Amino acid sequence: MDQLAVRLIDFISHQDHALGLVIFALSACVEYVFPPFPGDTVTLFAGFLISAKGWSFLLVFGSVLAGSALGSMAGFWLGRWLKERRERRPPRHPKATEALDKLVERFRRHGEVLIVMNRFVPGLRAVFFVAAGISGMRGRWVLAWATVSAAIWNLMLIAVGSSVGANLDTIRGFFSTYSRLAWMLIAVVLAAWIIRWTYRRARSRARRRTGENPTGH
Image 1 (cartoon, rainbow, N blue to C red):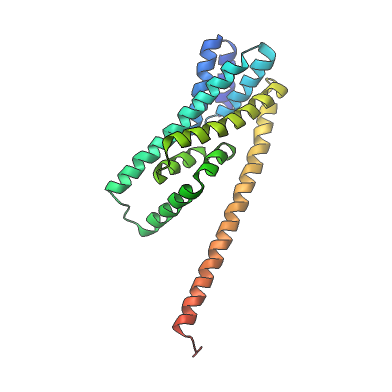
Image 2: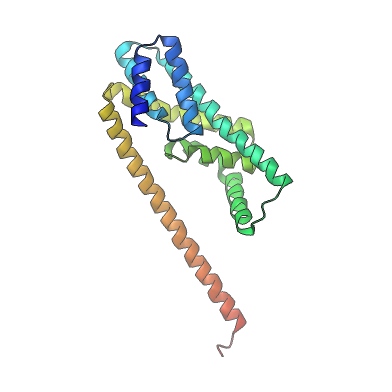
């Protein structure tokens, strides 16, 4: 993906503003559908073009934001389709159904917060919107919170891109550090969830054994 980012950056450098803006929008959109795509790296380069080449901040930011909104809603409508399919053909595996029901309930309770968080979780952004669609969240609210999240994230990328310039090694270093920290945080949260789940399951088993043999004989 690094080579793809280099080629895209080189290609944009030799294009006029109109085509460059289209590429910025498409790269931001594709990243939601295919997370390994280096859309964030391209947005960082957009920051360099604003500060060093005089590209319009409003046009660049608007194109990236539009692409992000389109990509997020693609994931959302996929979730809606899966929801309708599930209603027509319920899953056969009880455990899968139970896990999906818990995810749906979580999005019904905290969907707005989770959608705002999506841009700050590398590699899992599309999952948030698919889950939002499955849970039945309203499309206009998903779009609104997704836009807020994308606006904050892309402003940060453009600011970083303006400061580091077109040095791709610096850009890679920035994302390498960020990705490591983000995945470490995800690992900690996942480990805490596993420990909590294991503890609750052990307690449940202990209570069942106590109920089955209350006298201890």
